[in-house]
Length: 250
Image (cartoon, rainbow, N blue to C red; front, top):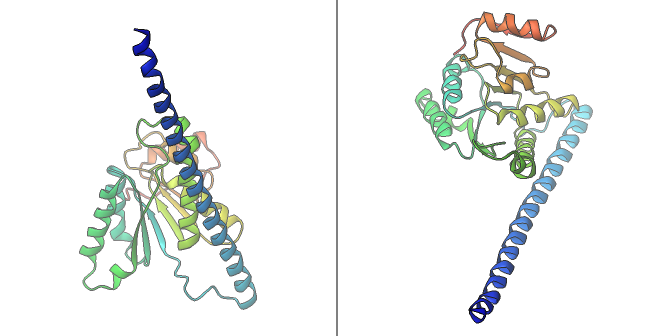
């Protein structure tokens, strides 16, 4: 019996070494990708700073700056409500659609919407469809959010905001919109961008705000609710908040 156990010991040690090597490799890739994203983010930030200097001296932005409207899409009902808003925002071109990389269906719906709205090719050329990292998937542990998906989503959102330089960011509740609004808010406060943040609370929210709504309420430029009861409830809790009710938007 002892000989059998002794024969298995080297195999167990080899498996342990292999597992350690895999963990080191995964961590190495994680930090290398993170470092590349940080460096790219720094390059874009420096470009924005240079753009600011050019604007101060010449009174104009770089000629390739388009300043699109950025629409943040969420899965399921969030995307449905956003698509219902879009016909009343037909003047907002160029535009950029953002969806989570785990939610390709939302981008597909946006593409089909753009195709159905455009008779020629002009509007299609003025719409981009991009993916980003979701902060937290359903059932994901908070430890992995803090150590991996959270930092990645904020870094990637900052990269997309600095690269696309949106004139406005419009969102209606999905959690992935928080990093984009934070990036837009910070860069606007630093006077590197002039991004307006617009949040439309979901029509499903009748008496209480969503978690995303409570987070963004304090620093978005326009905050819309679709129920008058919700506005009354919110003003009791947040008396200084600029909450707008103009009827149902979706």
